[in-house]
Image 1 (cartoon, each protein chain N blue to C red):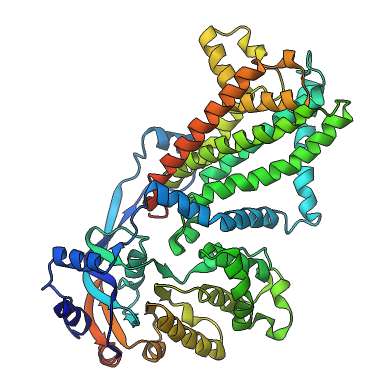
Image 2: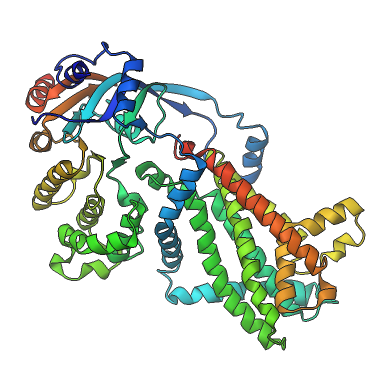
Length: 254
Length: 309
């Protein structure tokens, strides 16, 4: 591993608890809704608390690609959301340099609009200005490979196959430089050729920018991309170190 | 500090580095130009962030309007047809069946001003309630000032209103009203109402984010508000017999103020207005500043909470 330089993310003994509210359903008739409002959400009792992250600490540095592995529900995505600032911590602190971003532009896209308009919309949503969008547009279309079988970029996104749509989404998300980029299972989509290209792109992003976090259940991808891996289990770090050691230990434990 | 790096990075099999105290870590983070993740920006930085996102706000608003009619065969023509049908229904009920048009001349432009101007606020308020819940996916995935959402809600409705205004001007001309310089007042009126509406969208946006039930209740509130706003009849029907305090409150109703100003600009007919034009202008400015600025600050205060469960 190349000598790590400046820190990009410091996670200090973080605990995160989800509170799940019962009883009060989302909708209902107007009278029920009104009575819920005037009784100040009286039906909103905390029925369960899920302690998703229990005392996680680590530091990430510029130029690192860090794999996050662990079983379903071990807290990987929760941890990423907290680093991105979308989830409050119960105790502990998370410091970041720049703005960590999740690779998740798909939420901004609209299925009824053409791929072309979605590229523009997605780039603007990530904070680019119009001139930047114009500059990266050809690269995005080229990278997504949408036009390889014909001029599909003019068609509404609802007409795309799920693989095509996923490729376009990844291409848009990966077009921007990020200080800290977090990729949550985005690599599971697309055909083998596209997966290869995505991995290359992630390596580029890491070199250009700062730190890349990758959540994946595909140990091969983790080995390809990440030099360092953190193994989470039930909200606790079981291991944090060179990918080969950690992933081997993880595989043995299965 | 080099000890921290070794502790934090390469410790296979060990859960974390308890050796560093939180204070030391905080100092370390600060020394490296880092900040706490997910902190609310200052009001000034927030406004600057919004300005930087202006292209996104506009594109997002336009895209939503375009997507709305994209599966209809007549497509974007519906943007023009919807308000006309809307006015037609009210004309049938209030003009023909209930004859609330007595003493109002010319009734059709009068009615259309009321319907379109009211509709602008109504749709913005209703969409504002859903601005945060409908975009939770976006909020949880991307970083942007969340006020982007209520603002783009308002802009979508403003674009819809501009189509309605074209229809309205045709209707006004067709009913024999002459074009005057007063028509230019439409621009400041719409600016004032837009500021008021964006404030409303932000207030409802924050309330609707926590209490999703409001979007069930708001249609009833808005309908009540509509009947109090003199959309299809002169509000003096009520104010003439009401106690002075109630009458004053009814006349200060912001939507009524914007409707009456629009009627004043397009049709004239001072004697039909609820208040003298000068007073209407003063109230319009006060309302838009109060609700616009107040709504913005109110929305910003909960910035870091949007999208959290």
